[in-house]
Amino acid sequence: MRIPKRELKEFETIYFNTADYYLDEEEGIYDNATAEAEYKIVAEKINNLIDSYIIVSGLVGLWNGTRDIEPHYFNDFNEVISRLRDTMELSISFDKKEKAIIVKNIHHDGINVYYIRKPEWLTKEELKEMLEDYYDTREEMNDDVKYYFDKPLVKLNKDELIEMLSNCLER
Image (tube, rainbow, N blue to C red):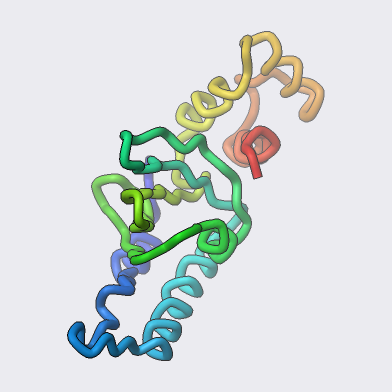
């Protein structure tokens, strides 16, 4: 996975945490206007760097353990946030080690962690591996690739692989 330097520099500035906007815990004063303005800045930064779509995967944390979130396709960062439920605290940051934008949704039952990546960051091999996860057999995958692009999987370029993957991801 490779993130272009221009994007990496921009993503490293991404930080938002609703817990930062409690001005006085005793009084329960919450600065909604500042929090909303900061969120809009972060969301705009992320949306400005989306070329095709974003892939969201992660973990759901519950009182009885965690479970994986299968990769999903989104056109817009706000779509991701609009699907969150029962949020008590929300944080958004970039993790250089994970090479992903990390969204943590703290709720009454635990913490959900979402990893957001652009498909353009993935190598051709990583894109092929993700495609393989969606098909029962290699033959079925090759049939679909031939149907869409009239050539075998090994001949697809990176943009075609990104397009093919978008047909497979849940929306």
